[in-house]
Length: 93
Image (cartoon, rainbow, N blue to C red):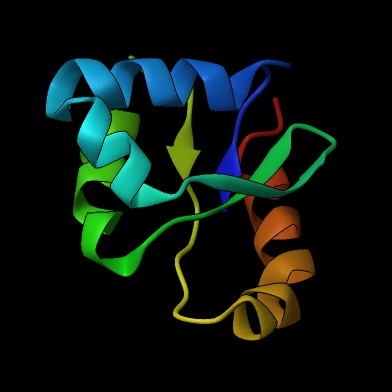
């Protein structure tokens, strides 16, 4: 689960991923948007490419922040509301 404020997030992520690890690895990663609501983006990727995805996100100069990871969507969705509330509370001015 990631926090972002950009409408074309998946394109940005895939482009940087390809720059760092090549287009073949982008295909192997099978990146998919599971949900995109209120600036919170949930992505799905191949487990073998998870580390590359995290490195890619870190290289995007704070545009994306990894909030949580899970082995299953069911587990992530069960915590999603709590994760969002916690993030918003920490970033209030």
